[in-house]
Length: 284
Ligand code: MLT
Image 1 (cartoon, protein in one colour):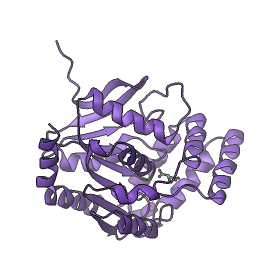
Image 2 (cartoon, rainbow, N blue to C red):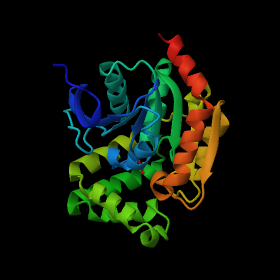
Image 3 (tube, rainbow, N blue to C red):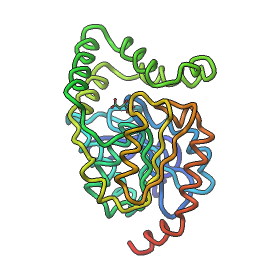
C-alpha cells in the first residue's frame, strides 16, 4: 500500500537527511513555510490553521531544527535551500509559493534567485537581503564563544528581549513562553552552527530585480532585528511587490499579530489567485 505523504508530522528523506514536515489542505500551488532561527515549523501553526481549508500548506523543520535530522554537512543557507528544492522534487511539486520569516526569508531569497522557475509567488516576512556586517559577524562569534562556555540560556534571553515588543511579555505571555521553550529545545551545537551559517550568508540584494513573481513583504513596525527600512528596500527593488507594515508587532509579526498577519496572507493569495493558477497550468 502506498504511504501517504500528507498530514501532520510526516517524515521524508531529502538530501541525505530525514525531514519532518506538515503537509495539509488542498490547492493547486502549495505554499511552503520556512521558519526563522532558531525555531521550527510550529511557529506557522496559526497561519496553517487559518488557511488550511482553502490552500495546500507545507511547513518544514529545516535540517537540525525541530524534528528534522542534522545530516553530516555544516549548516549553510545554500544547503537549506537545496533541501527545499529536493523536498519539492520528492513531493512532485513543480511550482510553489515560498514564505519565509527572517532566516526563512534569507533562504527563500537564496532559493528563488537560484531556481526562479520553481516559484509562482514569494512572501518575505521580517527579513532582509543583506549579508552580515563586520560588526554583526563579530557579535555572532562573541555569542558563539559565550554559548560554548556557558550554554544557551543567555542567548535565549537576549533573543527574546529583542524579538518581542515590551508589552507582549505581559499581553502575550504564552506566545513568548512557547518561543523561549522552542529556542531552549535546541542543542548548543545547533545554535552555534546556525549562527555561523547566518554570519556566512551571501547578500541577495543584487538579485532582487530579477524576481518577477508577485511578492508580499510583511514587517512588524517595531522589528529591531530586521527593521522596517530593510523591508522598504526589498519593496523598492522587487518590482511586483507589496509591503504591509504590521502595527504593534516586532520581529515575530506572525506570532504577535496573527490575525492581521493572516488577513494580509489571504488578501495576497486571493488577489493573485488567477496568476498563480495560470503559472501552474503553463508549467505542465
Ligand atoms: C531569525 O529570526 O531568523 C534570526 O533573527 C535571523 C538573524 O539573526 O539574522
